[in-house]
Length: 478
Image (tube, rainbow, N blue to C red; front, side, top):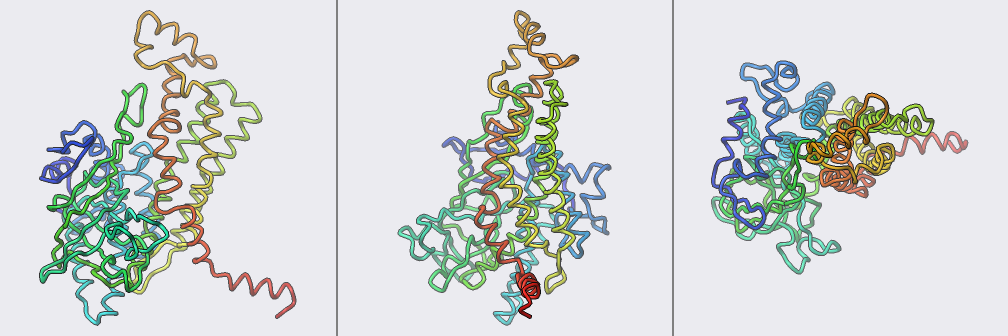
């Protein structure tokens, strides 16, 4: 089963997984009114393989065809194709990435790299064999995967072993001959109610005293003791008229509880090797921030399109300040696109010949996006107008007493009636002012690492010696 249909994906979620929504246990996630929306949204990652228009991008056509997400990049072209696939899936999903194969394969690539280093340190091949077995399991069965990395952290000034509550970081509480038992929690675990496998990674570098917290493994989402507490944020979607994007698009986020969860040895990748915790976290970031900047492209395109559409409908396209704002948005969007392309083009192979996106350019791109996003929202909202938050709803336009008057009086330039203009206004509002827009705005700052984390990676990745040597020559020192 190298490729699954969307229907097979949905059917695979009907198991005894433990998911709570609104304080209530969910008996079947596929039938839950909110989670089912997230499942339909994520199904796009399976639909692409069945679409003749994009199958060549979505599928690696070998004897047993498989999803391109599982292709370890062996060239800069492979990196570029991966970015295009992520962008295509996100565009199909109206600016919100599906993320059920993207993030999981980011983690698999990182695990493969660290597994080789861990084996060299241990003098055997056990961990690489475990990781390869799990990689092949996910690839062959075309599985949906989520990643749990961020710990709740407790006192941020203290490391894992110094926390007043030792469960502030996920930890090993018991080692058995056939596996380990883990306890604690992870937060911001995207898509977990609607995936098949959960991959757990450490969130930071650790020292010898943190060995019990240096843990990485993978488990099926229906593993006993794993409890998913779904966030209600974004669940109150309106109808297609009032909420044209968010009524169809949702990504579930969970606080993921590990209540003495048993993990068998063949699913354990890191179990106390503290020297490799930070390396694994960074290896994941190398790929996942590349995924992030690729899936931001449809969002910045949507901001440019929204600004231009509203300026046209409002009859102000020719105003100098409008051209200035739209030019600024175009520059913002196209700079990000150029950085994404450059990060793939400048990718380099690791010791196994697997290509890694250029971390310097990836982090510059992520920083560019994050620092410019809220200003871009300001420009779009300025051009759209206050009806973003004061317009009447779809039910008002459907009312025969007031609908015709609203449609007549709330129009824009000649040829744009009120209903058409408010539909466009609702799309922009969904994107920039409501819960869906707020979700995007917070992701811009915190997803895939904070602003400060990006700055640190830029400083770490830049080789200043060339620039310093050039400055010395200019000064006549050398």
